[in-house]
Length: 343
Length: 242
Image 1 (tube, rainbow over the protein chains, first blue to last red):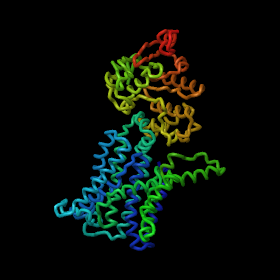
Image 2: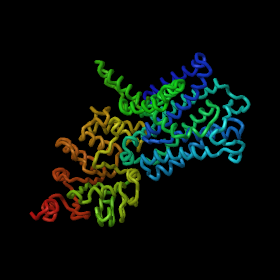
Image 3: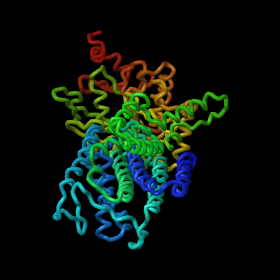
Image 4: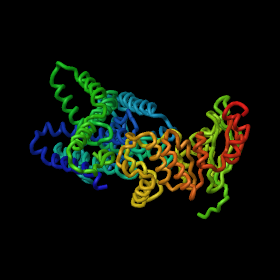
């Protein structure tokens, strides 16, 4: 287990170094921006888990992300503190995913329809919440605010609702959340549960014929993925300061898929890296008016699907392995397959 | 659990599987005793593979019952059948192409045992099936015959008491077929087997009780010698009276 987790732990360590170094080097504006990117990276990680390892192409992963953000915001306003709000956000989102997943997986809905259903759920949230402007739409003390959204109370110290965190400190929390989620997922995919999920991705019938209840495993990984997306959502509304229904739009739903395709399915660090790269690319493109942002993203997607179909990380791993093989070193104990999966 | 030789382990009563107007399996009454090795034969379209899929839960029969070791398994899911301790190999190799040979087999052993026991069982199975040279190769890169062996390895690693094999020798070389026969005889020392096959050569090598399917029904059930000598069986296979 430790051997398979080694790459994961190395990346986690690099993340910790970055986490403590960044605020000393970068400007506050960049740090606040980074917090948003980190939140999106957690979302990418959650899809990397359920699509890359579980083989479940969820087109609406962003629904759980947005739901997590909304639940956090509404609970934090009502409770007057973030500690319970975070827990409620993660648990309620997971419960929602479990209920949705129950009908999908136990109803044996096929892959294509799963994508359609999850995307539809996302767009339903988008339309519903957009129409909630006006004083009559409120949950407890929190006004939903329609397309203007709700401003999110910042995270406070645990059990101390009066000490809010500064943006710089929120960055630490977000980065820690990303690293913890990354290590957790890296561990999960190497457990028996994770390996069975990978086997289902490879061949559902065979897993079933070995005696594994495929529906239950799929539901499990789907629910865990939704919980992680909710963590991302909580960090996102903290980074931005508010949450609007735009989070549920088609653009964001598609963007999540693009991160994973570009980063590479079957890896975790790939989609995380791709999220940061594309986030900064879109920010950079936002500062000029020659090229349309969406056009560039579309071109990137097409180029990747055609030229680098496996995504960046698996292609790099393959390349390194091939180079290593060419060398006349007698290292027969190359760990393929399993070890690559852990990265 | 103590099981005596002679106990009925698989039974179907009046089993029917109809697809629209086609009666793929029609009123089949079938019994298999413990430690028995039974071959199901029949020409293409005789219903043997459909019957096999009804036993393994891949198809839900139109009517009738499937009883495995006293349990009603008629509308069971495949994983429920497998969870009784039944090892199943499908006609087209169903393996995990993106994983190594070792992990394919480990996933089977791990279903029943803790991590360390699963690992030793995996090593023993790899030894037994002589897969040592390719243990770290991705199954997707292997030849057809080898993939069949990996699947057999997954069946064996689960230590099943009942084994269902659908055309285990399909696409194998002579040498591989011969080894498959050996393996089947060895499995039969501890478990009952149903082997679907239409390679007569292969059936003769195993040579036990044979059930002949024809147009969805059991035409006869006897030794291979008796079936070979029977004019009805010849007619079914060759299409004319010999």
